[in-house]
Length: 177
Image (cartoon, rainbow, N blue to C red; front, side, top):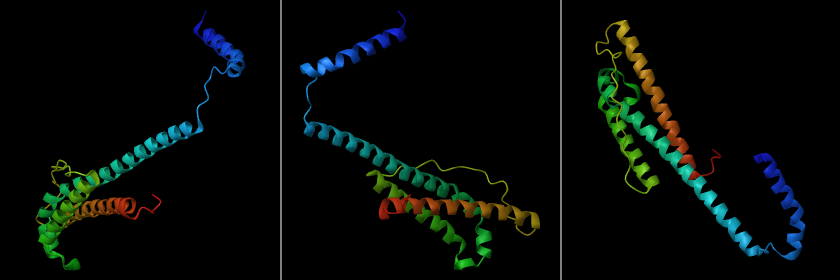
């Protein structure tokens, strides 16, 4: 007999015998309180699973932000002359590096609080920035430095966005994200 026909026979037998088993009390009646307790226990487990997954997502956003910040330590030091020549926002060349270090420390603190432990420190990206040109007197060098600054701006925008998401979800809790 094939496996499919065996399953069909078992199903048919069960369906035919079900009314008789119910009449004779072969299936014990489970109290409503026990059913509700089981349902609440399962709902609690699902809620805990969802909460843990939610927390892991926040930690992952912070970890990515931390790695982005750490990846810019070296290039920002190479860009010192560009920042020194710019009077935007009254920021000196050393301020940008210090802001990055402060932000790194703040994100590590946030990660520690969300993880209930010490923060994980990721590997710093060691990238070569061959496109950077310290001699910013010619047009080609200025264009290369502009490209690097553009990437820096985009990465810092990502970090800001990730931090807003984590804040919205962790502190305010009513963002609807």
